[in-house]
Length: 175
Image (cartoon, rainbow, N blue to C red):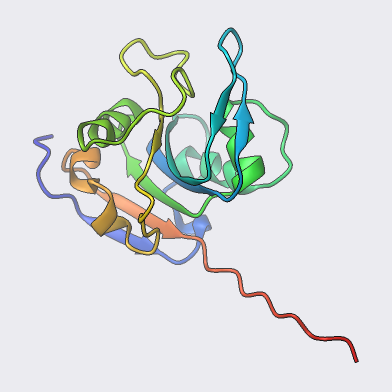
């Protein structure tokens, strides 16, 4: 794992993400402020904008199963990130089979991403200040390869990306 170029594959359906164990990055866009209270910490107000959450999936069904849970709305809050996914939904995912959530978060921090909520998603981690990071205001979720340091995050391992299709809204005037 030399941090060299990764092999990036894009899938059209979230159900096609790998069922292997590993790490994943959820890209979320908050459109309104969100107050987040973590046990034993002061409340944090997350401002509207782009965020990335680094998580791990080592149980049955691997990355596909864990991300599938995150994509469902209105779920019981089990993990810190459920507070975000219930409010914002997931715009895109980068999956790192065999990868480490700490390596994903560290690579993004090294690229200059700030930590908006210390301790978020990292209560069981002694090396990371947070597994939630802020992304730049001009972040483009349609271009994960160009907007995230995927090669550094993957450490030379394969990467699979998925982007939620844009929602089309049609207003039909009455009459």
